[in-house]
Image 1 (tube, helix red, strand yellow):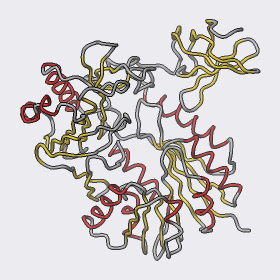
Image 2 (cartoon, one colour; image 1 turned 90 degrees about the vertical axis):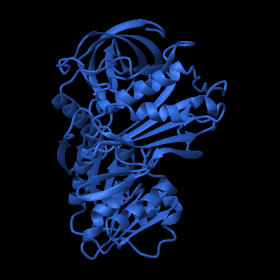
Image 3 (tube, one colour; image 1 turned 135 degrees about the horizontal axis):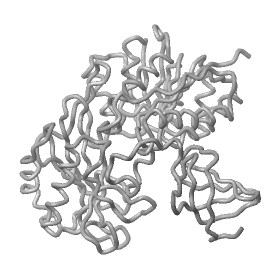
Image 4 (cartoon, helix red, strand yellow; image 1 turned 180 degrees about the vertical axis):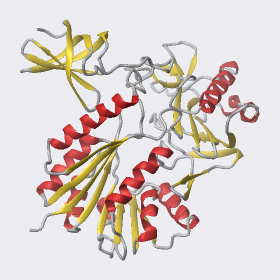
Length: 455
């Protein structure tokens, strides 16, 4: 066996995230993107003793788990949804197996409560961030998602099934408008061009829509914003566009950075209702992307937290404070800590909107802020970014010595790493489950409840 060699084999096991394993001779080769049970052709990329990596070239035979035909016309080209050839039951079973296998590798003796599915399987996303580019080098203008396996090529996803049809209509209208105007997209390597991103948000219940065009400042007159606005408002949509924004971003980063946000029409925010509470969502604030699925997640967290009467709860990495506000009505006090200042401002505004007076939100890094908080927590809720908790911050969290923690994670591999540390420092996982908010994709949320061992 040598690098570059083309091989075939059956995927015998599959792990998070999206890694299939094929036995060839005496080696187990990891082939990213290959599902369990598939017969695949791949090229050898790396070789190590007993292991190696391969690049998927072709699926020769589908897996027994692939029991439906994909409904999205962009499946296999767009890099977004990987599980569209599986019925939702098979998707849930695969995600549950992945999460439990990871947890079982570091902990034992806990109660596994399975996986909870999303109440909606299509049109569930409340936010999409599209990129401008071309489908191939020097090709026509495209607007959508990155092509599978590419950092540059863009697939125009105007038939996407995980968003409401309103998104697809708006995307197509914007693309047609700027194609006709011959406005160039921003080329990241040359740092020239105008169009960067289109961000659309829509509430799950009212169907109100916020449209945000992100561009450079290189040729503002070419954008024809008033004409563009009128084009959008003329669309026949299921929902209603309540706000149109123009964000200027000249940073070298490909991320959507709001250097200047200019209102073009209407409001600069939306209101979403979750479990009877109202949340104001600003253009760049974090909010769970599946509103109906978020209700399942938050109900699970509330159940895991349990009795909160007369207790002080720390909600660390609190985002816009949704979890904190779900717990506040039956707690003595909830203190949220979040590094993104805009999110903290939204959390404070939402708490006032919901009539909550026992919530405090602090802007800053958890690693530093918890040294400054005078109150001591009775319960700690953790919902960190994908990469988990900074080791030094985790040390300080453990030093509080609370009897109970609830850890929410959207990246199971980061979760199990931190659970290993918590276990070594005196905490046992009592129960855990997975909550699927990302139907047809590789991603899944996890919730675990931990209790301090008596020492």
